[in-house]
Length: 65
Image 1 (cartoon, one colour):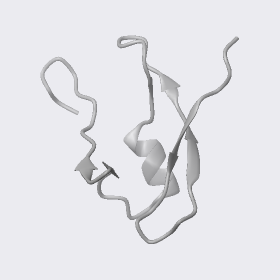
Image 2 (cartoon, rainbow, N blue to C red):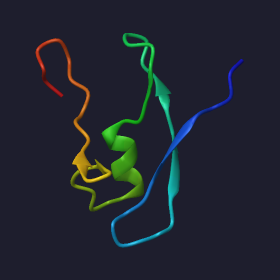
Image 3 (cartoon, rainbow, N blue to C red):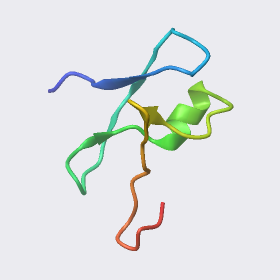
Image 4 (cartoon, one colour):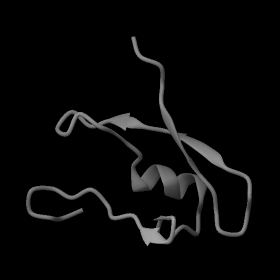
């Protein structure tokens, strides 16, 4: 059994990070964090950025979220 993985997030206005557990996506085989999970921790979240770049949402085969 593998250890539970997580991804750290923080709001722009805080230096405190929040670790959100990832979920396994069986289609891609990757561990992902759902937007709903982020919004539960950060009620006013509008988008995610890393090193000045916006992080895009996963999409289905029709490029729909």
